Image (cartoon, rainbow, N blue to C red):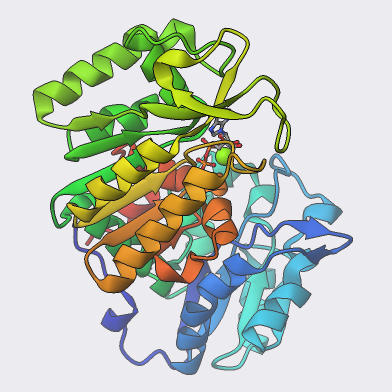
Length: 399
Ligand code: ADP
Ligand code: MG
């Protein structure tokens, strides 16, 4: 893992101004947040800097205002939610740079926290305009990035600003980078990767990166159908990207070449209609899917085989559910697999890292959120990391 500075590298911060990039892009309903997980994630960094005597200025984007002010997309909308989580008062500052910020810093006492306006009200943010980044940096003594979820974007407050100030990873960023490194950077081997979810087309780059890195590539969910089709299986009415069977074959060839075993289900759960507990529900061998049936989950035999694979592995990285888990009983394999991962992790035989919107939801549904090694809620940034890409916001922190 490339070296980066953390809050441990900061000395006495009395009176210093910290510019801290956080993710406060909270899901809102009727003027308040429906989920404050993102605030909880950055709370340790904010409080630590505050306790060390810094004046903490939070930088965040909120929605997509497209480079102009919008009253409903002001970060002032989340002040109450943030205060509720960190249990401290925030000063809202309706600018990100210039004299208003400077005057506000004069009013803040050491340890106080200010929230700057939505960085995306200015076109310079998404354009990564160095003049904009420099103007923000002018009011700070150092920069902390605690928003891994925004690190795949080279924006002024996620990347550009690091060129003007000493840059540090916040606690949440540090935790995420360490967990991801333990999963794919320098993992304990053998490593298994699960790639599931709906479509191959959304995860081609992920698959291509993984075949060269892991010993076991487990393919589940709708995308397994495309791989099965590539192997000559008739998948009936299943979700399947027939135009990508050539690509799927190529990925399987590359895996063979790299010594990576690709695991596809050999039994599946099928139905004629996509509805909860449909009358036409049955389990069959992949070669027995009728032309009016669709595959909605991997079968019990395949699930058990995957459990056996996991027992031989030291590390698992997981993105994408194994079936259409939102609809019963097509959650069966995903739930069983999640519980198995949790049990092996708790026994200490497996390091498990999972991410992706639906994967996080599936783990919560299985009740194992606290029992896996690390869950990334970073969405797009997590997927780009799985693709093996260098994330600009992370690269900018490298010492
Ligand atoms: P993530 O958000 O974790 O990256 P994806 O968005 O790629 O995951 O995929 C999740 C979606 O894939 C879920 O909505 C799930 O219902 C769907 N899915 C999984 N298996 C199947 C299947 N066999 N047929 C249709 N949809 C499926
Ligand atoms: Mg999804």
